[in-house]
Length: 304
Image 1: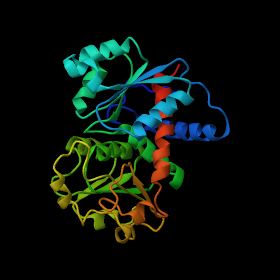
Image 2 (image 1 turned 90 degrees about the vertical axis):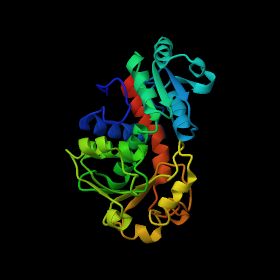
Image 3 (image 1 turned 180 degrees about the horizontal axis):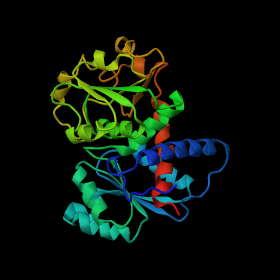
Image 4 (image 1 turned 90 degrees about the horizontal axis):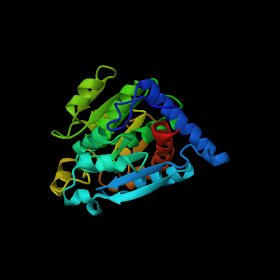
């Protein structure tokens, strides 16, 4: 498949039809990976990966995915590039566009990725910014599809910080027609523009009550209360113990509810070990699916 958009920055650039096709394509690639040698869909293609933030899953999944599809990667730290000495994002984007077939950037400010995409002539993928994490959303919905076999009539509950992962998750819900209940402390709500736009397509319930949000949920999700860019560790007091996903809270979801976490997790803060290691947890499938959804995304953006 081929996406209409050049870039993936928030998750809202792709249509509902494309989103669903990407999920199915990802599942197909996963099955092919288990049984036969995959097609070299990205033979002789090069992906530049720019890192300003630490990374485990993003780096390894993109690197492995490119290799499995016949391409290769160049890993670049922004601190080691001329950008750190004052070269503009515009000049960086134009320069890289002459060398590579696509760019992944994992950075702090979302405006950096927007400027990069504006001036690059090759596709730009947001590998995570302070505002959005669309690659994680693709893996989340692939995992939901694998375990629930459908999207229709499901309910997602998000407990904790209305952060970058939550923002892209809301866009994903709007693409799949899944209603979502979001419980955050006051002042930690998701981006209001995301809510306003997505509310045209789905029901978004916002509250400060995790017990109400999780009631009858098919999917329960959370993330660390302290994002990479957060320096004030006192913030944790606003979340604990009310917003911790533990066994007592999970009992208020449906009996067959699944638990997702984008990782890395701060065990016994946003989630207890008994939940993340429990029978309802699918976080390791979710982590693996970063590989398969990113292969599908890369093939759809920079493939022949």
